[in-house]
Length: 149
Image (cartoon, rainbow, N blue to C red; front, top):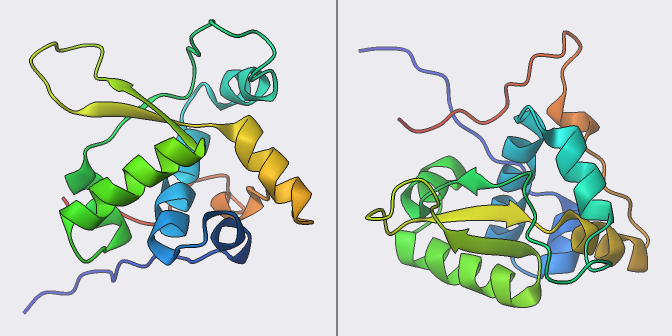
């Protein structure tokens, strides 16, 4: 028998309030976490605050290459199909952006990007602010939800 650390996912009330769905809130939280831990978070955040002001300009920062299977494992969802349907709903609601994976043309997976401007606005509309402080530990090492790999 071996010891392994249990995985956990945190359901945030603020993200649940804007998504209306537990799994969508978990997925959005996970994508925010991964975006925050990325090196270009500052540029992504600045770019996100300018969302919508310059139509036709493709965002360059904050894109994450995640498959539905990756998200399924990280969020401990019921099925990959439920993750795919939630991702589609979040894209249609404007909470996420999606594009074909840009590096390998034969790869049929997508890159996702949190529409941070939209998330902040929707949270503000219902009286919340986006709090990312729970992603950072005291020693500034980010470790929250390990991958299932």
